[in-house]
Image (cartoon, rainbow, N blue to C red; front, top):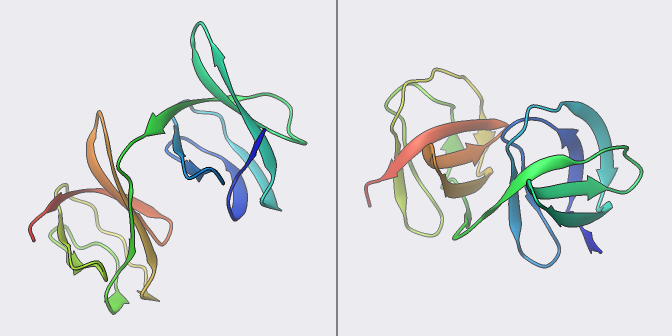
Length: 137
């Protein structure tokens, strides 16, 4: 038994779940469920066809993959979304540049950032958006 750290807002493809034990899990199936709760109890079940996240109080499970070497940081200063070539410096000193085209306008000051690698490349998740990125510094 474990706990999802912080706000759980449901299931959607590409959602990242941080558990209290410090592990991160990426939802890889297409199930969508809107559900909000703080720090819900959960279990990771290993079966023949993969690993599945089950959250207490929700029927069913979603297929997840573990994420390794997740970087947690914040954007240094103002985040204004993605322009296709956006570059952002993180408070940990790293600099990341958008690697695939996406335009999305979102404004936040020093938002939390997750950077992780999947079979689709290195992704940055910030302010409800996820884009491919590459480290440039």
